[in-house]
Length: 116
Image 1: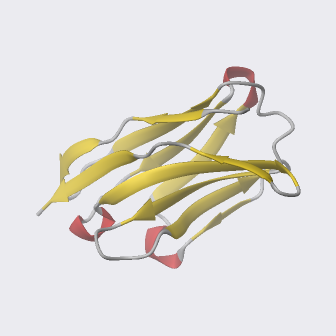
Image 2: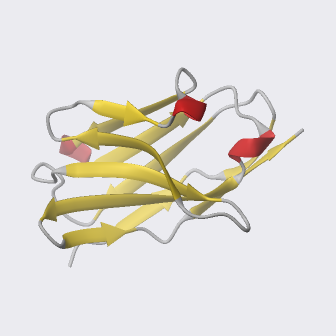
């Protein structure tokens, strides 16, 4: 069973930066897609950014130009570089990975809080 562990969250002022990491317990080289989701209080979990095995990326409009998703297969780790953070980015951030139909895993989440 693949396990994902997020780290890098914290408290930052608006305009600041954070880098989230998602470390997998096994090789991510064969993962089809990996992604970062977030859930703010009282809101549904939403996809923030995704990266495919091809390297193609996608972002929700609200983070385009500010966030960058990447993956390092050698380190079995995915990252989310978050710049120009805004208070509305405050949420619990989760990583997700899938490697076959019906086969996926979630991390436990890491809190990101952006103060105004």
